[in-house]
Amino acid sequence: MTNADLLEARIFSRPWTFIRGVPAMKFLPPEGPPEIAFAGRSNVGKSSLINALTGQKGLARTSNTPGRTQELNYFVPEGFSGQAGDLPPCALVDMPGYGYAQAPKAQVDAWTKLVFDYLRGRTTLRRVYVLIDSRHGIKKNDEEVFELLDKAAVSYQIVLTKADKIKAAGLEKLKIDTLAKLAKRPAAYPFILATSSEKGEGIEDMRGAIVTALST
Image (cartoon, rainbow, N blue to C red; front, side, top):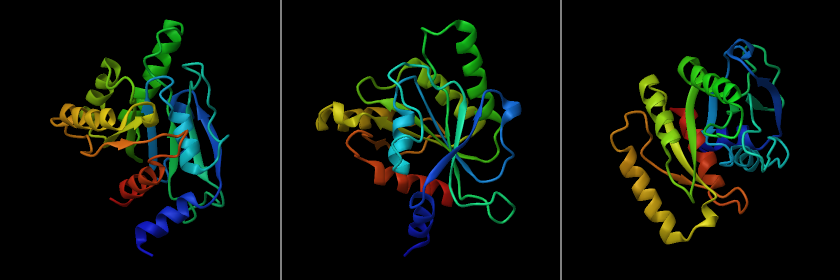
């Protein structure tokens, strides 16, 4: 087995657990293991993707109601003491969805500030996966997040979700168009992932991408 295979097994072959919901920066856990965060518009499928990656259907709460995730939700593999020398290999962070206009403005503003403060200030954040609904492509809110990530020099990679909902030819065109839009963005990883949490498509590729992000 390669080192990457060993790390992937260490991360994804054991159960995961939810450890904390963070409604404001002061409640963040102490910086320890590297963090992989998932950002995206409300109802893009962040929680479903985390559940598919960990193989635990009920780990992250999913809902058909946009905007339900209102905190930074932290998940780690089970079986680590949390003491120095026995930290989990990484933490997954489910971020509040952005771009949901139906919630009260004050609530939307609070979610947005939390997301942006986290992206700017978390030194253990290794990579952000920005999820884009394959049926809709990149929206203005997504581009605003790209700008923030570029300015903060935080590595990010695009994940096209719900890829089973469009035809294969349309998905390939979307990948090409998305890459073209990212060409001049310095913090964007130049490879597009496509997943379907419902069908299990692209999940192994996504796990491999996370291991690569943690290893570099």
